[in-house]
Length: 289
Image (cartoon, rainbow, N blue to C red; front, side, top):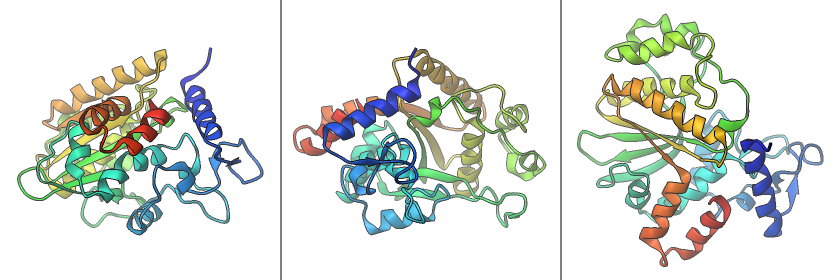
């Protein structure tokens, strides 16, 4: 039986080939040919200079190095999917449009930023916490109680079959991190140091985002959105169940956590913005629906 990750990758390889886009291996001439020759070949529109700088500042090595293709050049890249969806509205200055499609507050949504680093506390000890959480997308708001929505985006990686890492004991040993979120703390204790509860959902990563957003904006000043790709396999159903399980846990602490699929977002965009954005909508629908 075909696995979800294989389905996603092979479909994306076919889409690239059908459009005449040349592919290379992960090491150039070596590896499976599922990487585009340039970053822009894998996107609806070229990255702007600020977007390139944001991706470069992230910890994921998205843009590549030493003449090797970056992760964003993989046809099954989550970053490529994210940029193809969000950059169109960012560059057109219509953040509210994509916010509405994601079912998050649209009024006063002012900016979109990629790979925003959010420290979990002031004066972070780099020996204990060498990296700050990188949120895939951060939508900021002009005024009001809601300051930001952090968006964690998942494509094929949720179906890789690899176990996700749990939380390091250093997080639990830092008592100040957990004020006002006892349910999140209880879950953190369960998945420290190994996560044997979730298979598709990277719960430790989401907890780190909650800690970073909470430190930056206060518990009531942010929302966390999980934007994920659904698949027509049992893996997709199990993924959804794990998301809903996580949502019920953090809701007990008053954390506003939402989730939506890419397919739902794309269909909403088509409903609201066809035909004035038909070139963009045809690209993302043909590729990702």
